[in-house]
Image 1: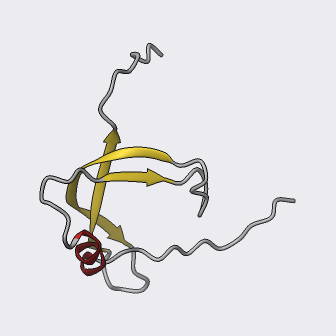
Image 2: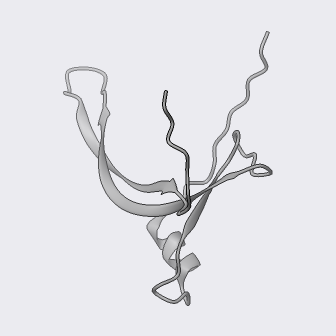
Amino acid sequence: MTDTFEHNPRVWTAARLREALQGLPDDTPIHVGVADGPGDFDGYTEYALVNLEPVEKDTATAGPAAAHSDVEYTLFADFKAGQYHYDLD
């Protein structure tokens, strides 16, 4: 039997992000460290932040009310600049 656990990271708000960026020069590159597993940043993978977009998420509701869409803002990250081999698969 597999052990399970609840993982509830604290998602940053726009205000928290602004606070963290306060005082940095406008041309400062931002990288994103992606955890290898829930809460595991020991062997994180580093990506470059490339975009911020509103993304509509469908939300199902119970009862007679119709499903509706909520907008979440998502930061998108890409591989860092460098030389890479083409994946021929």
